[in-house]
Image (tube, one colour):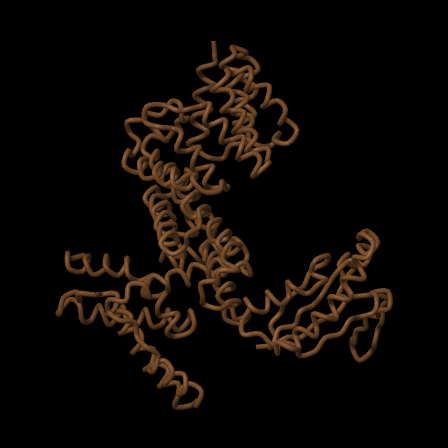
Length: 403
Length: 113
């Protein structure tokens, strides 16, 4: 590909999801908007190589897409009076100004809230958000979720059908609905992030993209909504993402206390910590407390007493055995492995099938010198582990325990 | 656009409610229908007799067969419906969720073709 063609392609990749969000509003539906975006892209491929990339490619693409859609509807209109009315309505509707940045941001938010609508199944929300808001291809989404492209495509088609037929509106919810609706959106964003951050299979560049997209969406939401949970989630993702470079070494997961903290992204940690200070000034909530825990791991070390305090708080907000396990591990760091192990053992019944319970127990037994028991626990964890990077880590521990 | 709100609940739940609660739900239900009428959302509503009174019929090769009871043996059975007019699914979901029986049962909100 020539440099010029690559530049055009790069502009399109960034602009396409934003253009789509606006076209859906202007044209009143996903299918028409996608057709129009495709037509606009063909027009750009025709015009840009000769005339150069326009100063505002987003406005250019919106305008081209809108005209192409009107054309298309007019052609249908020869057979149908309702189509002519629709074409006129679209022509009369105000086109966004070249510099109307807030309108463009609003369209992006409308699209997020529509894709994360509670009337859609959770896996459809995630697939639709990645496809429509983040502009990932169906193949890329399938690769990230280890699903067949045809499965993802069906999920997306079904969701779009429901949006159209049941008439899910293209709006940012009003103040009375916003708190419960934002919860679903944050869940979807965090799922996208975790898919990029935790999974070890697949294309690593793609996974970095998923994390970057999740962070971009949270930033976008934070511009609109004064909701501490939005900033809490943004802080949590920034802080976790900042440790990316230190998290895996030679294809093997590196536990936090063994990570080379010099590899952490200091600027991103500072941004995350500043957000946490702001959020904690208000009421404590699920994401902000998790962010506060992540913020307590600094480049110089981890503040374990503080971390245990935040886990106490988190356990009150979310009394789940998994949170209790994480708290037990933090207690072990503060008070020693024996204290941690006592708490871990209490969770045996709830977490017998959870690989990280076995891994945490194994680690504490190892630190207490109870090596035979540690070996059995590591083996149990290994049986339940499917992630390659985690497997390698546990296998190394097992090797180290051999006399 | 019209949506059908299918109101479902498990009648056994009535016995587990605190005293007076069931009467309150019945009163609220009648009041809610009137409120929907005032706000222009109401098209039609009916409450149904208990599932014991249902008969399911089928026509196969011109021959009718009948079975006693509703077509699916579920704990939560259809108890009534409200047909509403709403601008979009958001409005329809809000109207459906505020049906008093949604507090002890559930409401299926389905667009009308």
